[in-house]
Length: 119
Image 1 (spheres, helix red, strand yellow):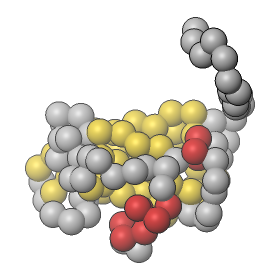
Image 2: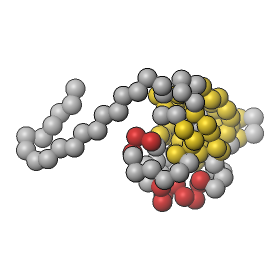
Image 3: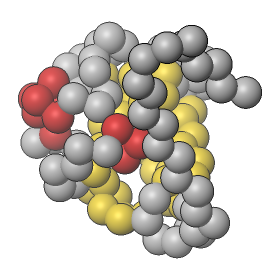
Image 4: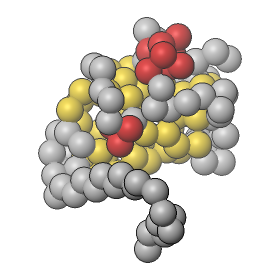
C-alpha cells in the first residue's frame, strides 16, 4: 500500500526483476561476531539510482543478508557508523577504498566474511 499526498507532484519509480542476486555473510572482528554495524553494498561505479545502494544493520551474530540485488559489480564494507548515508556516494568515499569488491550474478549468491572499517 502506498499513501500519496492529497496535492502536489509525486514521483514513483518501481523496478521489478526476476534475476536479482543475493549477498550474505558475517561481520567479524577476529573470531568475534560484530553486531549493530552498518553493512553497505554500493555499486562499484557511480550511480544516481538510490535502489542500487543497500544498507543492513548486522544481526546479533554478525550476519547480514541482501536479497534481490541487481546483477553487477559492488563494493561491500561494514562500519560502526550506523548513521552513514548509504545512498550518498560522497559520504561513502572514505570507506570505499578498503571495501571488498563483490560480483553479483543473476540469481546467484555470494557469501563472505568481512572485517569492520574504522574499528
